[in-house]
Length: 390
Image (cartoon, rainbow, N blue to C red; front, side, top):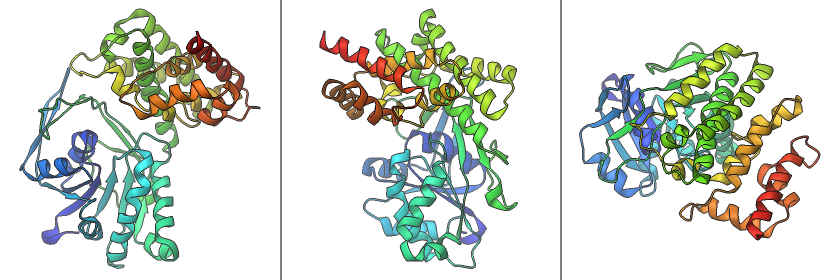
């Protein structure tokens, strides 16, 4: 806890989601927010202003002014970030699941400096991945080595499910951020022992799994499917892609398949899920959010991996004998995604040209060849490879 009794949150990842969603809600919860990032220009830009504005674009949107923040460069001043963590109440991340391992040593250094008598540091990874905070905790444990037991006793770790569309921002926008009005932040409550962090608008739940999978298998599946079908059709914007009746039908069909999985797995109400799907698609249609299929479609190899938005629910469906045709259709469109500026998109097309269908499918999707979903994905891969050779 900082001087004068002010609560403090350290947030790793000062990008658009960090400022426009997590940082905003932490500010509204009364925390001083210390952003940590490796981008020199971004850190400097944040420290050059006393406030920034989060613009909610679309029906019901409002402007929110954020104050009481600063930024520390974790690349040039890791010790400075560790000192902030040592006296923080909350640590959050929005860096991408693959970057959590780079954040962990700084958290370890902060926990080592933290008074054993201080209240436990409340750690939440706000990433588009299942069990991201569990992943971060494992990385912290690994980085702590022999001191892991003692240092982990100074923190509590809670998984979260976060949802807010933050499109690409204009180059001249400074540190202001444009977001959609809608957001959801679900946090598992058990880790906190009744001492919940102050996050207005978040809801604390006993069992997070249904919320994580509902979000990942609806919002993320639908968003990426819209991007890949849109890219195939040569459409630039997400909102324009969903205005295409054929694409809207394909995306809706994929989400009907994921909803069937959620009903089977978690006992969620089909009528509630139908309403949720409609809300999600309406959000994607928001013309005030200028978002492109190329931005949403980036990192296709991650998005077709085993526990991600397509293969994850499709595998669960196949294991239960439920339909997967529409989800396989979305994977097929993902295999066609080309974007020279995206490293994974380039790698995807290279692998499709150099590996046979069986090898590629096993490597890219993580599916065992004996899995009931494997043949359909392998056939989609082979079809794409045939088109590439034509």
